[in-house]
Length: 172
Image (cartoon, rainbow, N blue to C red):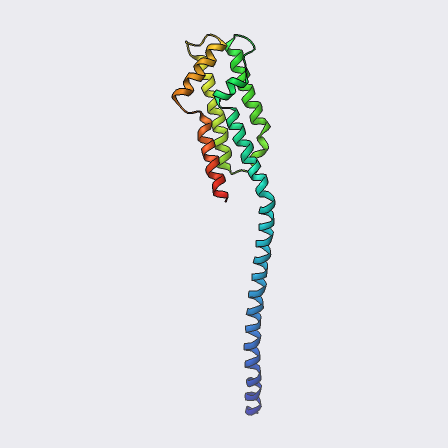
């Protein structure tokens, strides 16, 4: 009886070891295949989404360029000599440009979108602050003051543009 039990164990132990090794091998193989499939899916998604993301960065860059006071003032002429009307026209133009690009926020990082919105708000604040100045009494004077202030300091959108350029360079 002991001999039969010993013979049985001699067959069962190698079979159990072989089964355990086969199980570990196939489990590792299946995990590797799943990781490979996930990688290929991610690669395909990235291939499709990269052009869309780059286009979003391009559109935000264009927006930031268009709201630079030096370019905005050349593009948007005053309709009257009233400085408040011109201020409203400039701000409405900035808001319209921003609203036109709202959908881009889903393709860029939260930090990039936040910096873009901050640049927009800083530009609007600069226009409002200049309008409140005692030196400004007409739309033409508002244009002069805004342009002369741009000689001394950078536009708020310049910092956002630098951030976008750096973020795009990190994509590669």
